[in-house]
Length: 314
Image (cartoon, rainbow, N blue to C red; front, side, top):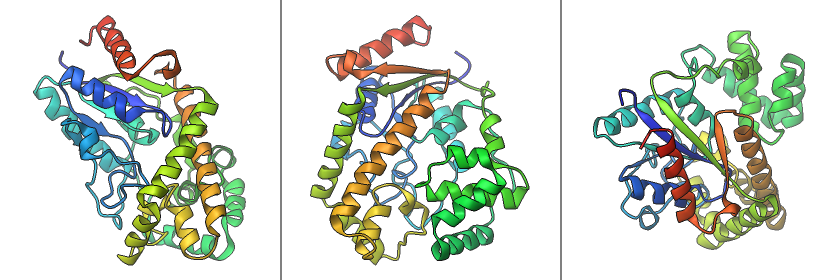
C-alpha cells in the first residue's frame, strides 16, 4: 500500500485502551503512538495512568515522556511528531497503532486541520489567566457567552484551559473558536485509517473510574503532585490543567479539604469520560466497540484484526 495506514484505539478514560492496544501491537508486530496530552510529560505518571515499562510487555511506545512538565506542547507539534513516527514505521512495513483519549490529537492526524494560524499569544493568555484568578471561572464563562455562544455551550464549565483558549482565540484572530469545530472534517488524504473507540456500560465504566482514582491515591498521587510543585510546577502550567492534578493542587493549597477534592476528582473524571464518549460517538468515522460484548481483551483484538482483514489492510 502506498499510503501509511494507522489503527486508532480510542475511548474514555479507564475503558481499557492500553491493554487492548498492547495486545493488538503484539499480534501485528508493531509499535504504539500515544495520543494522550498528559502522558507526554515526564513526572506526570500516576495522575495520567501512564503505561509502565512492565505493562508495555516489550512493545515500543512513542510520544510518552517527551516534555518537561513546565513546557507547553501544541496540537501542531503533536501532529508533526506523530507523522514522523508514522512514516518511519510505514517504511518498515509496520502499521502504527495510535492509542489515547485526546480527541484533538487524533483528529489532527486524520483530518485536514489548519494549525498554522496566529491564534496564540502568551501575553494575551496570561492576562486572561489573571482575570480568571481574580474573578473566577464564572467571569470567564460570561465573557465567552457574549463572544461565542457555541463554544460556551460545547466547552465544559470545568475545562478552564479550553474556556480560556476560546477567548484567547477570539482576541487574537477576531474569529470564533467554535468556527474551528466545523472546519476539521476534511479527511487527510495522505493516510488511511481505521478508527475504533472502546465503550462499556456506563455504570461499569464509572465504577472503574472511581476505583482507578482510589488506586492512584494508593500509588502516591498526592506525593507526585507535591514533588512537581516543589520543582516549581504550578497550576498555570499546561501539564497541571489535567483532571487529577488540578484537584490535588487545590487540596494542597488549602482551597479544598481532602474528601471534597477526591469527590470532585472522581466526579470530574466521570464527566470527562462522558464527554469523551460523546466526542467519539459524534464522529461518523468511528467504529464503537462495546467491550462488554467480549469475554476478554484477546477477543476484542481478534475482532479488530478481522475488521482490518475485511477492509484489506492486513
